[in-house]
Image 1 (cartoon, rainbow, N blue to C red):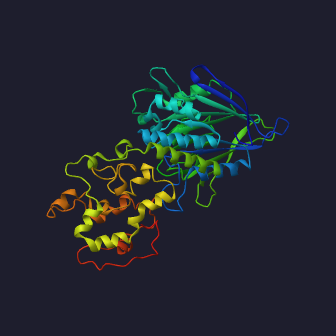
Image 2: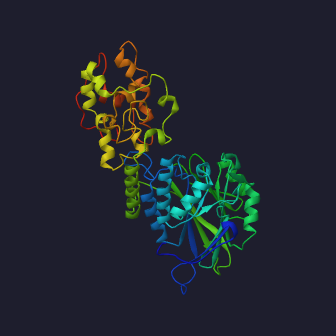
Image 3: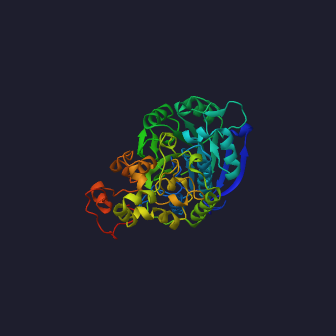
Length: 459
């Protein structure tokens, strides 16, 4: 609970379908606010930290909380999420999602709409996460087929004297888990809003851009349709008098909607709306840093094997003859190239994770170990201490057959592997020619010395 709000009443109706929260801002004797804000996030996609390894990347819960706290210093602000916080369904992904939800609750999250990744997890997992984290799941057009658990259908927040109705829907085409029963989004929203009296009506919609606009056109009685996933975040625009915008792309942006009251506080309209980048210039919230550290500590206890994370491709993990030999075996026949490797940042890639306490996070291990999830390659910290760092076979491919018979070529074209890890998120400055010059090796190569100016972001 923030210093700007006090929860004075909570009512859950039959089946958990209706939730009413009354918020008093600044005390009962103060004048009602002339405006208030709503901040929404979406498609966090498992990014509890900023998106990517580079130091200047956007996103992360620690910066998001700083942003929200700053906005709450200016006006009363409700925080909601449109969905897509999860990044998979494995136990590892569930542990990460639980930590993300705990972080969101530290920001006083009022509603979390169900996106595709949440529905993929299924009702039982969502109910367990609600019980362990207090997450207020919201979905107006979903229910469980067996009736065992139903997310809240409509949330009503009272900000001063304004009753804010918040509903949440998802594109029915995105539902692939048979446990759910799906309604038409427009019909579901109309039915839910008819249940209660509201002054402001907000729709959280996990839909693409075209569907968001169509939904806004079909619901002229609402004030805003806020969504994702739209690939890139959508700047605010209006369909009639309905504001449409989205915040998506791994939590790099949030959206802010401002609601202004008339002079007599009898009517409300949408005011300034904007996207806000969760930039690297923002300070990190101490509470969120503590939450991240607790997540890392939990991962260190679990030490997930690679084949239990949902991150390993079956195309490489179970391919016959695909097995890691180890960089030490490569060095036997290629000592000059091994010398270049030892002087490169690749040979110290694991150290980068250790410095951040992230060495037990499988998402990070993929690009900081040798042969992640491949036979005889890195499996987890306890069993694979010899396969930390980025070794020869990350680029040349699993080479067990090659070291046993040099006439068998290594399976991968090394130059084509760089961008698997040196992508836009993790290595935004990557240029093949300049980066290759730092580690050039092989037959006929003019072997360079160590370049101490190469940063950990660049390799």
